[in-house]
Every structure is written in C-alpha cells, then in structure tokens.
Length: 319
Image (cartoon, rainbow, N blue to C red; front, side):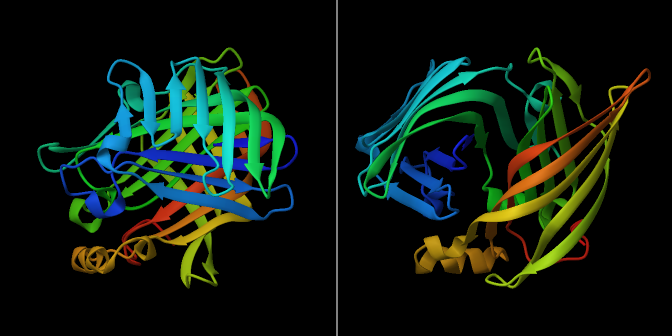
C-alpha cells in the first residue's frame, strides 16, 4: 500500500488461495488492486487465475500471477499490475527501515497446545515511485508505502473475531499496530502488537504486554454494524509508555466479504458462525512516547484496516 503526494492512495494484494479455497490444499492465485484518486473516488480490479498461471519462489520474493508480479528483496521491490481492465500500476519500493517481526518472531500461537499459528512480518516504510493507470491515463506518482507478508495454518475466519491493523509515519518514527482479537473458539484473547522504529530504521519498541484500550464506535450505515471511530491505546513495555490515539477521516473501502463468495462459501460462513465485514480507513493519529528521560509527541496520517469477521459479542473487546 502507499500514500502519494497528489493525494491518491494505492493498495495491492497477491494471494495464493481464493476465499473459497481457504480450507483446501490447492493453489488458486488471485490478485487485486485498489486506487483512491485525489478526488476520493475508487478504481479497482480483482482477478483470479488458474494454478499454472501463477508461481511463488521459495528463495526470494518473486511472486507472479498472470501478468502481475512483485519481485525484490528486503530493500527494494518492483510491483507490476497489468491494467487488464483499465486499472494498473508500475511501482518501485525502496525501503527506509529494517523489517519488523513482532516479538522477534512475528509468530502468534493459538490453541491449547499452540497448534495453530498466524504469522505476519512487515517492512513498514518505503519511498515509492512510479506510475498508476486509471481512467484512461497513466499518472506519475511519488510517496511513501508499506509491505507486509502473512502466512498461517488456520483460516483467519476461524482464528479471529476482528483486527485493527495499520501503520503511521509521525515525525522521525514509523509505527506499526496490530490489534488482534481471537474468535470465540479461542476465548476472545487479545493479542496487542505495537512496533516503533526510529529515524535510523531500528526497532525501539516491540510490545509483548497487555494493552489498555478505549474505543468510540459508530454504526456504519451501509453495513449496519458498529466500528471504531476513535481508538485510544496505552502500551507499557520496553521501559516506556506509549499512547496512540487514532481517529479516521475517510472510509477508503467498505466490503461485506461474504459477497465475494459463491453460495456454498456463504453457507460455510454461516455454519462457522461468522459474518465478515471489512473496512479500510484514512486516519489521523497522535503518538506520545514517555521514557525515563524524555517525552515525545508526534502526529501524522495513517491508513489502517478493520477486519470484523465475528458476530457482535460483548466479550470481544469492542465497545
């Protein structure tokens, strides 16, 4: 994903499985792109490919799905989305910070014997340059971006009730937040992750402790479900107290995820007791870092997603 100087925003996703294949041992590559224009309008595409039309290398980042690709290392990446239906991108990512692996491993375990896992690593700050294609034109862009990589042995629909997930650039700091809340099956356990990287690109805060959180919600009119309008966090770890106050300014994406599935996929969702909704926001955020010798206050804009997969439940830390 990336934010550009002209006010446009960009998101791309490469996935080895289609939503209907989450529980199957198959390769069903799919890729999507979403561009928010400077005027706030959305241009998007979502494409599926057969197994022989995609490949994922094991020794380096080299993902190809149809004519689309993401190729690079931990420092530089080239991302190409062919404008098959008029929406595309050619972008170069040059990363300015080191990779962030929450807790040192990026590994969140679930289950009585830690038999399930959900893993996420990110490189949360890059200089992004290149072009976007939409509305019959190709536009040169420059801005800042983010990359993350996830893998797991359990469907996220079964693992999580909801999550808030985003990144922030504030002053010299790069901030990554993952506020995961497990599903009813796993007792609505909260796994709060916050990473802060300094101006040299080094990790200076990696939260592994519980979090204090206060949320002010609103009812999204299209989905008729309560989502956070403002989220206020207090993290205490690494000899510091960190306060993060997030309030969204713009809804970038509104999605009822089950609509992407065929009828049998929707039936499976019903049997699992989930009704997934997905929101992506452009937000403002205030950061306070309280250390032994100084206190730092910074502010910035961020993009975050709120993936709400479970049904409303007062035990799910969402009030």
